[in-house]
Image (cartoon, rainbow, N blue to C red; front, side, top):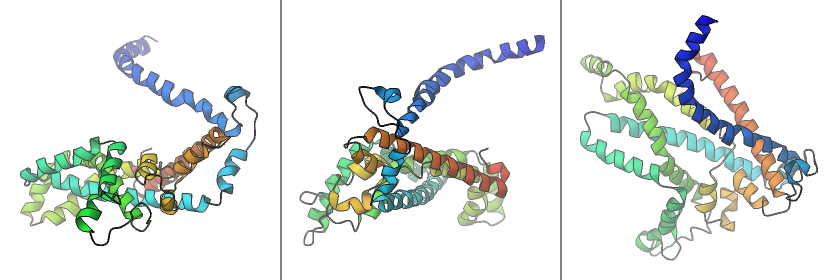
Length: 302
């Protein structure tokens, strides 16, 4: 017991440092989980969550009985798959460019261009996109497509490309900073030895940089796949300006839930959808991590 107490005293400063974060997680992440019960209730404000009558799985049935269920699930999954691929690919490329010690002049330029969208909120980005795409006053129609203006908010043709571009613009800064940190930890002597052996920049990237970035790539991939059943509400609601003509390519699970909140029983349905999204994300992370562990256990998260 004496040895145990001495060890405990050694870690007391670390426990005290951890305490605020632990309290934050408990208050903001674990206590609200009791609200999951709303997914099985017909919520009534006057009776509260616990007093509201139970409805079993009817809130889940509402989501799957919608005639648009195929469209919203298709959009949610396919967009997220493309987002994961594009954001990580662009993030890796930009991180390599920024971290190249031979491009010091480009380094400052790319850092400023990446950190700018990283700090912008979706509300600001939505105004910027509208300034480009506005049917009457937009820069593209008035400066480029003068003779053949496009009714952007009525024509769904280009919106998959627009949404992928805007999401990349908004979020690529995060992945780029992560990959920059990973590249900075790589021993520079490896590149020097490769250069002496005659390896050019391309070979150095594929033989040194990417293999050593694999843990970071896999970690970001697993974190992204846990959210594959979610969608960025601001991206799919604010950017398209909630245009009904674009619902076929912009409706996702989250925007569908938001619209269902306007109808009676919306709180229970949104809670059911949130629970379903979390459960699917949890299963996907477990499966994906299991696959990674079988291929290379050292790169698995757990």
